[in-house]
Length: 148
Image (cartoon, rainbow, N blue to C red; front, side):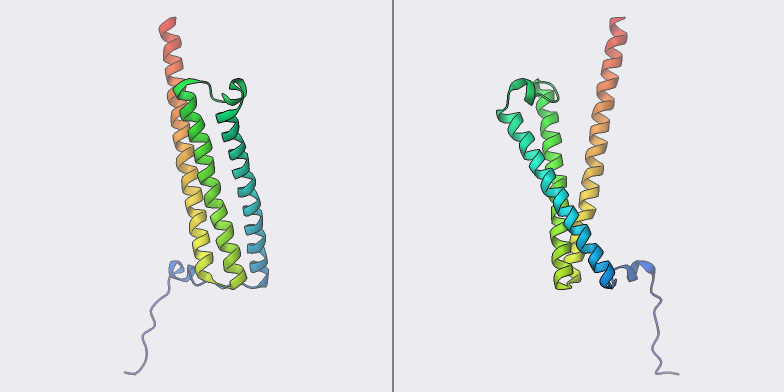
């Protein structure tokens, strides 16, 4: 009785990081990583083209969000934010595909951490854009009431 080991209860949160993948799940992770890489690369190329048009394009083509300081802020927020989001998606794809190829759980964990950052950044940028649009509508509504 004295030599028996005490077994500690294992919670689901502790067991989450000790995942094992079978052949089907490894194949699905490869597919997910491949499509995430394709989406991130095409997104980054799109943002680079948009940046080139904004900097060197015709003024009517490049002013997607209007001119002046507000247009510059919106263009930088849209292009910069989208580029950062797609960079996190690319890091996820690269790390997961490397981890699946080498059967290295550390790379897979880093990949899922990049995916967490991807969704966190996308959520924060969405909240910022919604707040800016709300303030713009509020200012426009109050301006219309003042002119009435």
